Image (cartoon, rainbow, N blue to C red; front, side, top):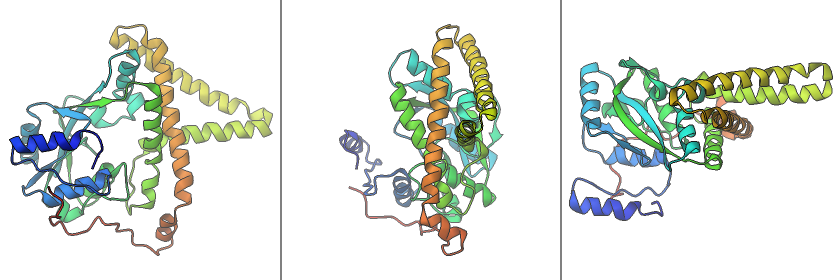
Length: 317
């Protein structure tokens, strides 16, 4: 249901390859699209590929091989992040998201050289019976639905495996305003899922920017009232500045380009402050969400359409 050229492109592919089907998604959000796809799938393995990415030619084969050899319920690999347009800022943004300081130590962004069990993967290759056991994707989560689903999967005893030899390529916005907007929304959706899930929907790494920005803001406000405490926000900024400088030197050294010494601190600041401010706004929205209070006081079971029966929907063209 997008308004770009996606539909004619898919229809053209479907005419050439009859196995391809175009399915309508009236809700126009990712989890609804995923659930429609699962409901209409006929195979025993379900694999997700995002529109802003491309995968290596051996991606499907490797996913299935690891799924079968490891006995895991969900398999994925690492992502290589690329700018959509060439340029220093775009390359810096890609390097930020590929570094532990910018990605929060996420395995699929900075994973090593060995196969490991992890908490989530990008995209994912699932056994179909996983959705029978755990339910579908939570359609109240416009973002973060994959991580919340994988939390439910692990709570149910499922295993998620990451193989670094499975590679997908993700293309991100290459300008700072778009990067700010995207991170702000990611920050919002690091907090809002708490109103719509019975399980802890994020990990500590998703909440670090919230703690950083909230701590800096509250200590700065306190320093205005108690001048003797001005050292607290200054200390926070000093520690952050030192960490950013050290990391920027590391990035510039790896890239063998001194220009990153100037641009990386800006990119990291956009990443962390936008995400943190988004989480602060998400927290305000969360506290104003009736679903949270109904759940806290036992008035809402919060199943939220994740246990619906997996059956085909009349959505295809």
